[in-house]
Length: 399
Ligand SMILES: Cc1ncc(COP(=O)(O)O)c(C=O)c1O
Image 1 (cartoon, protein in one colour):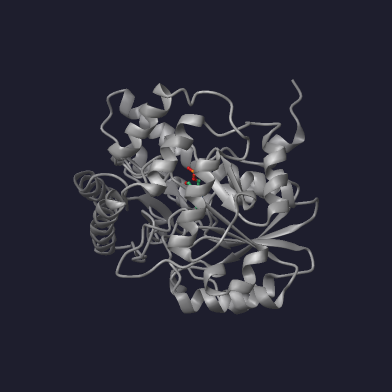
Image 2: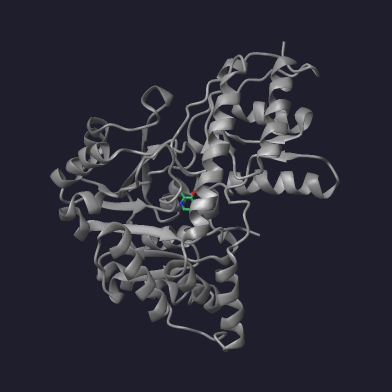
């Protein structure tokens, strides 16, 4: 069978692949510690689960408006005003099957062949591939631990060309957990103000997972003149431990929201009716569960970063958000495993850990920098301890 050329432009999601491999080993009875998952290990809070059960019993089981039910749009509008002081109307909201699908719709609705999209790196794996699928060219601005994985206004300014369509920006960021301050975001936003043709897609999916007393901001709330050309992307997956429910949304110019909805009408149609009802409860109901989860993540972040930093050959930047650390393991490259294999890069290192130490991590190359690997701390503190003990031992065994 001859498949379409577009399939060859992209990679299967490497993070999902690692997670699947670790889960398959576990299913065979192997005791694997999986640092691969990009999802909270907590259950969806009870009030949200109850709302879903009620939705089924009340018959919310049919096709709905493609771009989202009005009560969910109203809950999103209220959230945007409450948390960010940003005002939207229903026609400026579009609901899809997760933030990933929302970002996909944006790329399909905006990008033309040859358009450039700026992505700060290390970056979330889906950004470049979605852009390539739409015929665009990803333009990376790379940062490393020497700047806390933060890009500078100067770098952003330099990356913008007449072909730049949008900047896709996330703080806290996946895979580094990097969280920009209000001042840093303002300085980056000011560069965008200078370049009127550039749109901003702000991926706020980790907005609630911030530590060390830092506060979340997005650029349009700091610089209201950016709002007319900003698309805010968010969802319920990470904040409410609802990754499987598949609800994400965008807030932005109505012309774009309507284009995204039009395209969605020929692909998935509406996001699941029951999950939409559950998301109304997530956004409007008690927010208490978030703080409990946030505090637990913060404790784990401190533990894992501090422990990794005690291992010779490893340095781990202690970032302030999300549920990932992105340690530099390049001090282990060039060494040989007990079975005689030389470790040349992050893929070799991850394979060694999985085979010899039964620990799953995601190689940094998937996120644009081969010196690093991503470890998710969305697992219990006992498992984090067990996993880091194994990593320490495995590194000790390298010659
Ligand atoms: C940076 C970032 N954006 C968006 C998403 C997508 O979230 P979902 O599709 O579950 O809403 C993820 C999930 O891993 C992510 O890490």
